[in-house]
Amino acid sequence: MDVGIVGQAAGLFAVTNIDDILILSLFFAQGAGHRGSVRRIVIGQYVGFAAVLTVAAAAAFGAIFLPGAALPYLGLLPLALGLKAAWQAWRNHRNAEGAEERQTQSGERGGPGSLEVAAVTFANGGDNIGVYVPVLATAGAAGMGVYAVVFLVLVAVWCMAGRFFATRPVIAEALSRWGHILLPLVLITIGLLILTEGGAFGL
Image 1 (cartoon, rainbow, N blue to C red):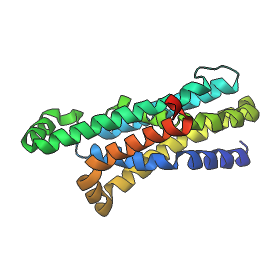
Image 2 (image 1 turned 120 degrees about the vertical axis):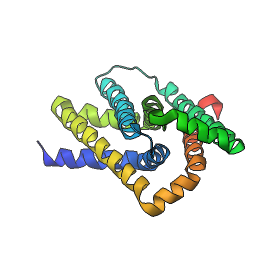
Image 3 (image 1 turned 180 degrees about the vertical axis):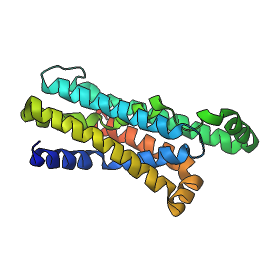
């Protein structure tokens, strides 16, 4: 295995996914205390990034699943999830007793679901596809395999980093106190940035 390609793959992943650590930290904070939430978040992160990698690899081979003009509209996914999270935070704030009851009833299923995490990961990685395609196309089949392995290993590293930050006492306390505000704010911001930077709806 070419060490140079490994280093390039690691650098490319880090540069294009640095914002995912913040999102993962917020997801892990949201799922704190709920059994199975870590597994669902990790699964969702892998499913979402695997979808990004699959689309990029297919496009590198000449297949077009998502026209370039459609990519900006992926911003609708985090925007919708952010608005949903904001609505839930507002509703829970309006009825604290009801929120406690729902949390108790949710039990093991509390926190973000795998599909929610996957949708945000895929939408947030939509703009990465354009970066990955030419790199994968010029890497060849063997090089593409190296990139895929390195990327998938680093997804686990990113998940560990997100959970690490979410469980640090000071950060955990801040996320516990403000996470219900930060999560929808971050998701809505990401959605709007994807839409506006891509020129969706003529923006």
